Length: 168
Image 1 (spheres, rainbow, N blue to C red):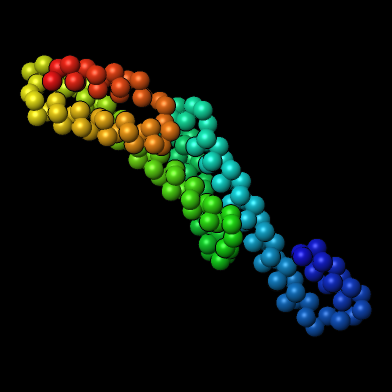
Image 2 (image 1 turned 60 degrees about the vertical axis):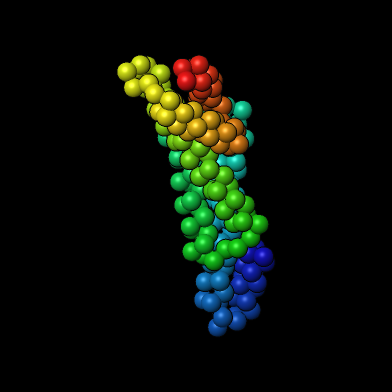
């Protein structure tokens, strides 16, 4: 559509019909900006989905993961500013939700693992309630991490869960 409009503007100039050319050029520029924003958004969605689908999901450095997430959020914000609505924008929203779930699951697993590790190492703080709470937190975090398809940290978390059960 953009190429056809450019061709039409050229033909109008050649025919010396120039009254609407400035408006046409503005429209072409806006359409070009929207098309480019859609491509940037599509690329950001693809990168983020690759991060989520990677077999080593959870092993990717947090900085890289967050960079993919910020890139997608930035591209979506630009598309929204241009009032771009399409299948790609809907896909971007779903992908951001998946990234946010993955990030929250990572944080929950890390925090529960750290707390459980501290309990296992400090025998002076052992009591049924503390151990039971740690088991509940860790098993919930493991379930969430499994749902988010995280791999990194899972073996340690599962081993700590076994240790807490034995200690209890």
